[in-house]
Length: 143
Image 1 (cartoon, rainbow, N blue to C red):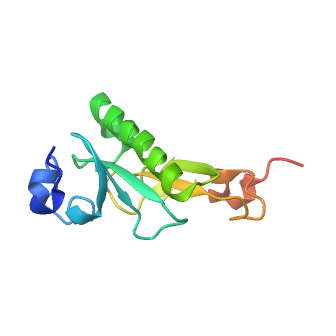
Image 2 (tube, helix red, strand yellow; image 1 turned 45 degrees about the vertical axis):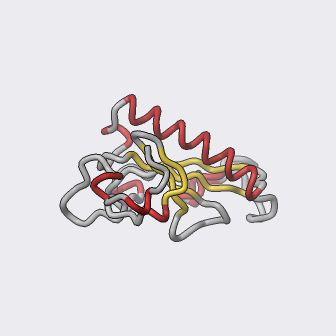
């Protein structure tokens, strides 16, 4: 993989980019912070916390369940590498990792993306329940 991604076209970076507009298939090369043969990582344009990172397959696929085992391994490899970088740069106290898979789950960009969200002590008064808060009336299960 060449190290100067800015010099490449999106067709050279992505695998089978969709012809219709996809924000991630048309990602500016300068936004990419990590890459391997089958996946890319970049900072979220609308971060929930400092360092919020997205990891995507290079091939356009809408669902986590539509990617191959090799693509899944590549995405998870970048998840590990992104965490290492975030630990060194931001020193978070924890992480939320998530995928909004399908419109009913809140997916707004139809290209699979895994969120790696650094969490910091005090960023929420009571962080218990984590991702359970996507449905607030069911989030709190403790007394």
